[in-house]
Length: 188
Ligand code: HEC
Image (tube, rainbow, N blue to C red; front, side, top):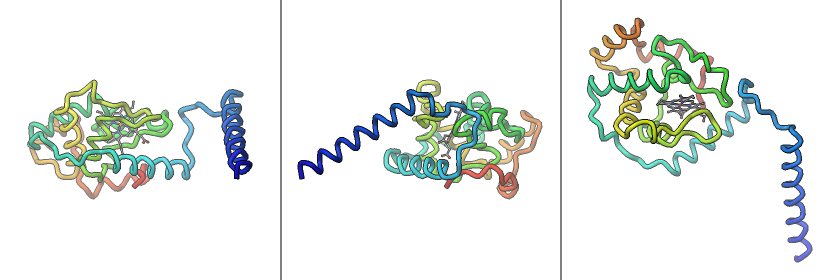
């Protein structure tokens, strides 16, 4: 038994040393404009979902959702998120293929996650990706407003749709049209 345990320990140490050597010798790729292989995307997104399900509190939006707060959410999105997640005129972000993993295009492919899930992603960010934690840059209310905006994309009240059209020159799309942009699958 002693010999077996020693064998396991030595094997682990050797594996760890090999992994370190591979990294130290510069074999690991660092470019951000590569496309992650499908198995990596699948593994990473199920690990992310599992971690969020374990850690994220099931909280409800404390900010009332109305025309004014949804418009505020759209403004917060434009100023802080559109550069990575796509602009209000439905153009994919210019940085769409410049990050590893790539940022999901949240207007072209709206999320169908519950609000507590979106809010947690915004508040805490996603480690080892370009997604920042916004808790030090935005107030709690701002983070809820942008969360509500993202989860109401297919059911925006008329006043918000009018604001969108006037401010960004393009009418917001209905739920149906959202699914046209097939290339931007997001993983759940
Ligand atoms: C610098 C680029 C960048 C900015 C700015 C940015 N994000 Fe992200 N975001 C990302 C990336 C990259 C991911 C994908 C992370 C991953 O693959 O797990 C992401 C993921 C997300 C997700 C999770 C999507 C999912 O599938 O669960 C949400 C929600 C999100 N971002 C919302 C926002 C909001 C809201 C803002 C603005 C307040 C914002 N992001 C600003 C890069 C960015």
